[in-house]
Length: 340
Image 1: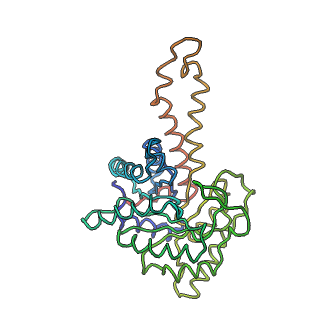
Image 2: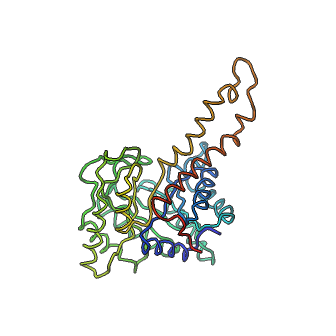
Image 3: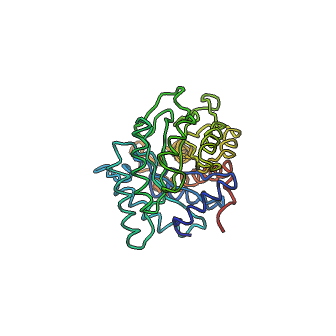
């Protein structure tokens, strides 16, 4: 199937919300990790989301120039071609983009998609994220309003993060403290500024104790029940039931019960990066340790081309990451739920 059209992406999100499941959003940094994500979704018979962070885009742009726009455009164009060979629907998304990188990343990408739509084509990406969590809520929502209007014109969904997620992601960091919990007032102010769909569709990354990075269950106090309070508080004021499509950030190490509660309360997208990075790298490390004298030319020998050939260990990396994507679809209940 091709990359999801705007209509298909909206259907994906509507089906997830109605069915109380969520799509794994897999961060990718190369054509190889892209194939691993696509393979995982296909093997699980799950539609899904593939996303590129600012750091991932810089890496894709090459270390000579580190151009985020050319790197992300190139991978998106590549994805539009190769995704046709996988029997699932895939949406392309850009992950966390703070204020100081908007002009070098999200705004140019929105302009590219807006031009494509004007010419009768579909947008290059299906959604973009604005991470204003380091700004005041007033400034965050003011920028979100501008981006949402541009996204609407480009037939794109915007993701907004209104309050901090703990830990560090691509240079944006927040302390792990009580500020990691969105309030009902925060949610109401968001609805007042961005509407509830009439100004353009958006996904809401609300905070319920989430932390980016690696942590073990119990080290972070997650409160996914808070999402119900946010929905109920906004529904009481505006009369629209279950108004938000929530995103779960910082999910590594979450318990099965925490994930289940989040799904019941409106989460339709959950980001995965740390766990899939490890799943990709672990088989490579195993291969290198097991074939030390082959991947290196030890003591004047010539090594073994079959072991240091990137295709040899690259296939292992793809399989490892794909398996982790399958596991994520099972945890989030999207496995077997692809649009027929």
